[in-house]
Amino acid sequence: MSIIPVPRVAVIVVAAGSGTRLGAGSPKAFVGIDAHTILRHALRGVFDAPEAQVIVVAPDDRVGDATTEALGAAGGRRDLVSVVAGGATRQESVAAGLAAVWADVEIVLVHDAARALTPPDVFARVIDAVAEGSDAVIPVLPVVDTLKRVADDVVVEPVDRSVLAAAQTPQGFRRAVLDGAYRDAAADHTDDAALLQSAGTQVRTVPGDERAFKITTTADLDRARALVEPVPRAASPASPSIPRVGMGTDVHAFGGDDTLWLAGLEWPGEPGLKGHSDGDAVAHAIVDAVLAAAGLGDIGTHFGTAQPEYAGAHAAAFLARTRALAAEAGWVVGNVSVQVQANRPRFAARRVEAERVLSEALGAPVSVSATTTDGLGFTGTGDGVAAFAVAVVFPA
Image (cartoon, rainbow, N blue to C red):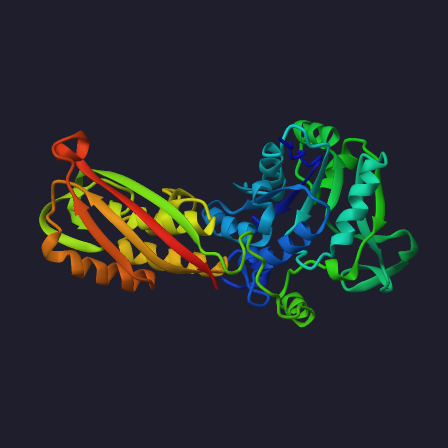
């Protein structure tokens, strides 16, 4: 049997910034350039570059969305991708990404997602320079504008631009040197090269690229949109004509504070289920099945307890968002079959109603069946409810 070699390069993609200056009302990395986000475009450049482990650092409340973007961009390289929550500063976010780098990695690149159109050959130049013996390497562009030193709106003197350069990302480092600099860091720096230089490391340069500009303002975003042609959906690792199947399961115990919500329906007079949301095991099993089929992780990735907007949420919110996540990754839900295992409530009288509500929310046919376990297990003793679902998705 063949062994797949572990990449010796890792790329940390920093996407945890708030994007205040862009004024888009959401974190910058999740703003659209065209049909895809800034983050998706940045990751396309990463995955078109030499093979590497890829760690995306996202805002704590957008880890699920970042996972969708990363898996959608990765194609057949999904095993190389992970997403971690960032910190309060850029340096803290890079440190979080660095902690997720595999032990065998020798070269680490740090890249700003805001430089979304960086060509793959810039990554290659940085990797090659580190591999050839440099401890720290950054891509740069010459400064072409005439520069002046000013004070209180008065020009003091011209600045010799021949000794200046504009730094870009990805910035590349020998892994041991970067680890040491972060371990000993005593202050925050604007980029990783500055951190290493403060520790006495020599930083070398390679040519950058005009397309690697940083999207910071609305004018930058307009420039990026003008440069981008319509981007085809990333190829699925499956054949375009082959559907995919996913399985999902969920369990909740009785004892919640509110009335029972199950299969998208309220059941007056029945005891509620415990859970971060409404405890609807049927809806949650459907979510897990669809996400599994689309290769998008599980319900905890996208609807975890760290996301307060889903506290107390019902099936419609979960299923509509799951349908959208699948669509963003290039999949259409074909159908879902879900079975409930519980002594109560009795589904026979409301099965058709449950199927209608769930199907409307998911935008695909959902069939529901129910059974008991003849007194066996926690469902048989009436302690809780279990649900099992199978979903089919097709390439869009």
